[in-house]
View: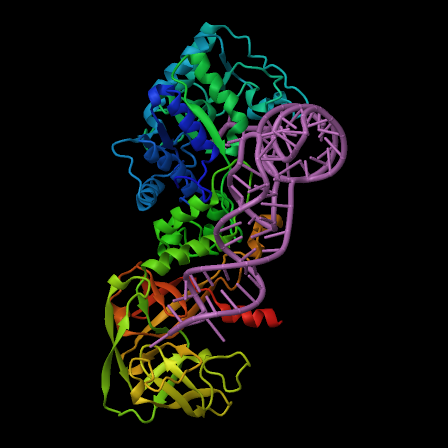
Length: 558
RNA sequence: UGGCGGGUCGUCCAACGGUAGGACAAUGGACUCUGGAUCCAUUUAUUGGGGUUCGAAUCCCUGCCCGCCAGCCA
């Protein structure tokens, strides 16, 4: 993500380059990625990760990983390891700079006492409800708290007793003393500390007061010597507060810069909403291959390179936008096309008997592993009298533009032989249950010596050698571009987002494929082996389908 | 209706006072032992109105539209 598709710098990199040029912070670049450990990383977070880590990398700087764990009621250790794994998967390294906001609780407390001594923070006894009433509204100024004029000594005494656990949860807060009539509601004496008796995943019961985000975050950045603090656009009107705390304390002052978060069509990108569909069992978990989470994409077979390519293409700006899922799919195909080994896999098998091929014979044919990459070499694939082809590669009464197998017609079996359909078997319902074909021995390898052409080439698998597997087809999780445009976004879930196919027939090489490594099943799409199994058979996830021009032809006829 | 931030092809991003360009998508064609990939071509945009200027997407004024903010969440 050096720059965007145009070769021009995004506004953040412009700022960074200017700061380096002007020698700000001695030309030092130090960023941080500050996740709250309360959910899994999704591709929207990946945009932030690639901005934070990517920019540090590009400009010879450092990026810290810091868990922003200031709210023990929402956070959980289980997410800490998962988040670290996702960042590593993207290819980033925080070295020995793994931090937790909770590491700084003592220092933050000391800074708070300093604010009290300066007369810019006070202990307020108003209840949460009262605070709300005093705050005013968007159009009306707030009113000063009756506790706003307490003396420094009284505030200090009260704050220390808050810390000592003398007061019940929620009974008091420490607030910044700024301006209750500020048009920016964030500046209307925001809370700095709340009383909360909840065991913290790292500090246990050491604290019963916890700092609020606005107060904690700027301090965390300052303590770590962060030069550029990137965050999403909704924090823009928190920036005056970020700056205020730092200025009051007179400590190292990082620059907060906001950019637009990523939205994608046909999905949702909020931890809360993703958590909801996990909890409701709409998907199998955070790593369900339909989820926009990094663990979901990974399980589906998407590579970090594809994700990073995508992120590089969408750019970095302030205006809110919704990127077309088709672009992500393009990036995935583009990446996989170049790297993936090809395999023959028949998803909906139709048995073909080649009547002039000896019953007891098996021969070995050489297949190209990847036409895009000669170094990928070749492999041996067995051929025999009975094979499977894709059911929809045969049409008894062909569409006028159909180029595959038809009664009496000839087609090429990929890298094998020309075959001609000479008969078909049907059950009592008239459903085709098998085909009888003849092959031309002279076309071995797939070329005819007489130069005659066939209209199409289809894939196949030797019946006797096939690996029987379950294949799961995934589609977009939601049926509408913007699920949040309706009241009940759960109602727009795409009922066809998952399709289980049993009895799929894969060529023998499939058995040797590693879990999670995507391959291209020619003419069908990209697939990878899932960690799970079904009835002793392997399960394959479809990463993404190949572009399907045939489907488009049919669609455009309607 | 208070504040802050935004409005450029269908979508995303450029153009930083000097020819509005790229990518994806779409459409048409070429090629092809994957109806894949590749290649070529085509369609489509500066939020309205005023100004400043030789010249405005860009600067100014003024409408309009969109997003965010009234947690003791982050």
